[in-house]
Amino acid sequence: MTSRIQPCPTESGRALPSSFYRRADVIRIARELLGKFIVTGGIGRKTVGMIVETEAYVGVTDRACHAFGGRRTIRNEAMYAAGGIAYVYLCYGLHALLNVVTHRRGAPYAVLIRAVEPIGGLALMRRRRGAQVPDRRLTAGPGSLTQALGIGVRHNGVNLAGPEVRIEDRGVRISPSGIAARPRIGVNYAGADARRPWRFYLLGNPWVSQR
Image (spheres, rainbow, N blue to C red):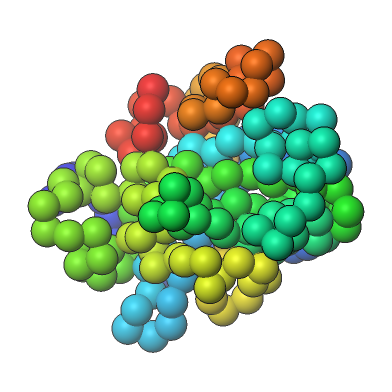
């Protein structure tokens, strides 16, 4: 096991309040989610990961966003809710991707969670991901982390302060100098918006999906 993986902390944190998500600045929220913890499952099936990589999607003016131009479908309806819920969709019909909905109702802003550092429930994560996956890749990537944490499309629309998928503040503070800002991944179709530095990750963290 990689030495950087630590046992799950015994102390739990507090769930982020709705006011954290309902601010207008999704770029700031994407940065501030770094160092927060995603907790899933109940007794005997609890898994925990610290967020180490995010991407911001800036509503109807962002060509890389599912809601660009005001597009509104059954798939992306969760984006139009008030901030503080999960937007989970299938990518290529295979991989569930977890997004954090932000801003007010009707403003479809969201933050994609791209990678977490595995903290607790490692044995269960390994079973979900398969024995052939090295620990260093256990939760590196948006489809990998949801598989490891047991997150699927059934969690679309759930409250992120609830029992199924919970984002907590456990007191980790990240220095601005420890955060990299780079263009988002896989959105080349978005023209100039593809070059915007709206992907954020912790410098030196081995679970970041791409550097």
